[in-house]
Image (cartoon, rainbow over all chains, first blue to last red; front, top):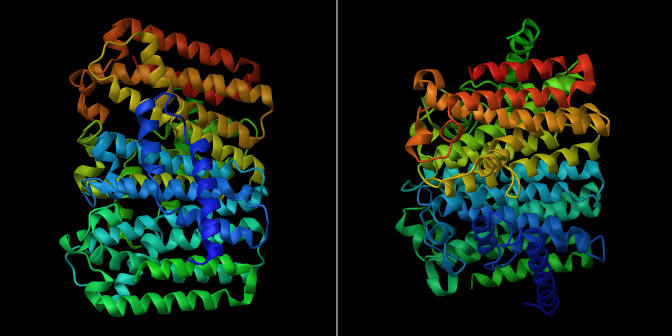
Length: 296
Length: 296
């Protein structure tokens, strides 16, 4: 990782964690078990990739990124809600997440369902409460976030199609379409929200969205590669799970080498999208390079 | 039911159902199974009480209630999400709802979890997209809605406490506190949102909120009474379920007669709250009378 990107992560991650800590209800507040479950899953770590992308895009337009931190935190809440629900026995049935027992293993299924519901609710509340931004822009941001999480081309659509595709032979195009919805939509929206609330002009906003879409896909290919090549200790979640459940993956379709090449191509295309922004987009470029190296 | 209230329900319910039909993704849109599950649960009927309260409060300030219909519909989506998740095996494990198999019995658990998630997401999207209202007011409306659904004094808090209280002896005060969160918060917020987006002055808004809180409690006592006294055919859901699961209920605590008296008292107090609004609040008074008669 380049020094500039490393120092960005070194300051932004604690800032995000601290914002999340303040936004999440304390464990001392009733219902304590629920708040404990929410905090357990959110504060378990993770790369904070979505918040980092949001902050990096906002930072193109503002030196002080503190105003965007609640929105960036809401993205992490929404992401964590999806992990908690995806891990449920009725869904992907996963016992480990971020190196620890998954939420339902630790707190039971009812509490995990409710903790997920609560994080989704809190994510919307958190964004809507950002009165530091223009109110119309904020409403549009909420509509966009809901779309990224929703059933048409968003995360829920992706999860439904992912479950339905288990044990099916998929083409690379079908696989890409699932991942564009399941993980790509929220990742690209994270970049978009940073630009939108930062005040980006239309052309730059489009460029940021295209960048987000490319690295969203690259991210998923990397994830598939790591699921094949890394141990549970490294992943923090059950390894080889995709193959075991008969899920289509990029390594299964293309092989590991070709998948890594695909990551390089997507990352290069992503950088191409934001070339017009020049040096101001250096952080986003750095994050894309960081993602690329994870696959190797 | 008084003629005025009956004719209100006779026109508002179809208007709500039609708005919901348009706001929910069509079954022909992919993922079709998910959209089918969402529509199945939302369009299964129900009293549309929350939308009706919202529209009635808005109607105090505007003759044409069409602008509030999306918000009213979002309240029904949020309510239905909570029913779907509450019915899950890990929660209340209920096989029937609104006279039909519950969502997970019909579509499976994974789809029911995702359909609930999707309805919650769509509820927020729908409110945020209401550009016919002042943008700042809309942001505050979203914060309020999220609070009513949330973990502090909202619906999720109520459901957690309700599950934790199974088999426990509760006082009337403890029972009331659970219901204030579990069903009361969304009911009173439905009234509040109608007034708030209608442009109610602060004092009237407070009156509407107090009214909503009282009828929210009355509603739950009625629900408990009906669970004891009515058959599954009439209820559309499993009857006697509360007692079977060792849930504290008003009839168990106070007896049926005293519970009915409690409903009358709460309804009377509710009407008292909005007396200052005079004849303009006639519809809300009518709805409260309708709720009261259900218990008898």
